[in-house]
Image 1 (cartoon, helix red, strand yellow):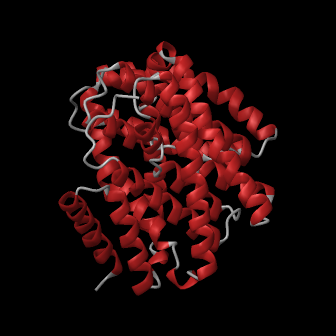
Image 2 (cartoon, one colour; image 1 turned 45 degrees about the vertical axis):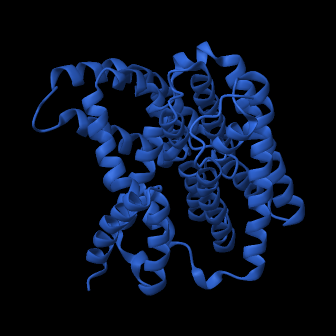
Image 3 (cartoon, one colour; image 1 turned 30 degrees about the horizontal axis):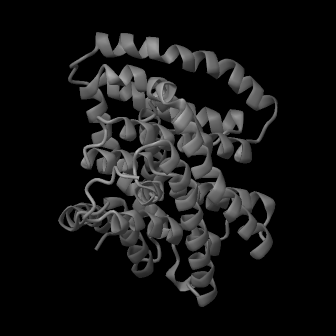
Amino acid sequence: MDPSLIVALVLVGAAALAFELNISSAIIEIFAGIVLAYFITDIGELGWLHFLANLGMLGLMFMAGFEIDVVRLRNTWRASVVIGVFSLFLPMIGVFLLCRYWFELELLTSGLMSIGLSTTSLALVYHALKDRGLMDQEVGQVLLAAASVVDVLSMVLLAILLGELGWGTALFLIVVVPAVLGLPRLGKWIFRRYKGSIVELELRFLLVLLVGMGFMAENVGGIHPAIIAFGLGIVMSEVMEEHEILEEKLKGVVFSLFGPVFFLQAGTQFDVRLLTWDVLGAAALLFVVACSLKFIGSAVPGRMLVKASGRFIGALFNYRLSFGLISATVGLKIGVLTQDLYIMMLMVVMGSAALPIIMLRDRPTELDP
């Protein structure tokens, strides 16, 4: 059977299986990619798979930027910043020290792994809070804003770590920053002018903007496209709030096609043949350090500042997925990570995405300290 047809069928099957099992489809898609790569060795030669996966990475970061609510951050900034800073930096320091001095990795590699394994999935935190009816309460607003702080700081650190500063970067920022700040006004005009058009010009505008900015960032400015996509999402979030139908259309495209292809393609880069006891042991050690320090860094300040149990907050902020996976993918692509290190990061990300589900199961609300 043609590999492209197999991939298409697997994507549909993964979505159905995730629905039946009531777990994140991304985890199923990553596993599916691992299995496909094992049985179809030339799956990585599918050009369209790489193209759509890159769009998926940009789309996921763009949508993550939408979730950043500047007004919410402004209203709850004290508690949110404290929780977010400790939640990010405590595990980041622990993972960095482990990678640098125990595994004896390079400085850049240690930095990338420490950032990628210390993030929090804002989307999964949002859904967990919404499912428990906490989004309309102050505790839910503070925790979601704190998760936003983690995401923003992660992207800033990743930009500093991976940025290739030079005249091209300066020129890119001088030209692009004013243009980006003017995008909301241009977007409002386009969305109002072509609202309801059968050619979906508003959606095309967003997709072309995303791809175009990403291309210029990487080839002119020396900045990774995922970072630019995240920034564009933040800038355009206020405009998108006024156009819910357009946002739903974009989510449909990203989460039904681009995103799943990205997760599946990430799984295809996981070579099962490289799994050894040393790799499994190192991944387990990384998992323990990253998750335990993340739990402490979130639970202690969270319990002090909001009316919720430390166990709930610590488990909630251990959700990792897109940011960690994108960090690993980028690291592998630019040669900062080896295949072994990529496998280790992927295992930790997948394990930590499942950990909160287990810890928070059958615990609908936990508001008591």
